[in-house]
Length: 131
Image 1 (cartoon, one colour):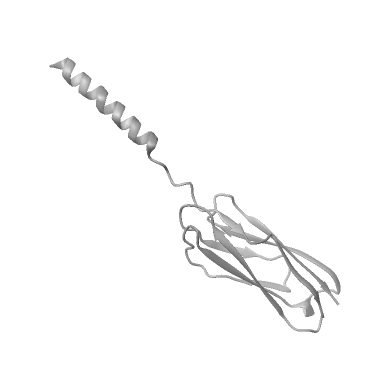
Image 2 (image 1 turned 180 degrees about the vertical axis):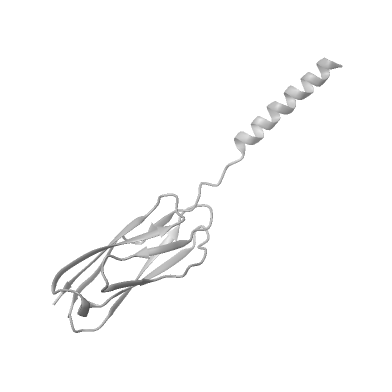
């Protein structure tokens, strides 16, 4: 009888290890941007605020949330929805540049996008020529 219990226990243990090895754990959320550079082109310093949209996709297998976006200049702001982006769905960052608050010439700034993505913080370069 002990041999039967031992054999049954060994078979059960082997079965559980096969099941756990084949069960896939979620890999996590990940974020992929349409582009890592946003180019406003040439804009007039007194031409008013300029706006561009930058889309991204959740390329992971669990929902993604953009938690914060930091800009490196008070002349730039970013709006985004703080909602779950399901796997394969798209989200949008709306970037507003106020050239009146920036110096004339080449404009290069970096914004940091913080999210629940496994790849961590993403950096997006924003550039323009302010005339």
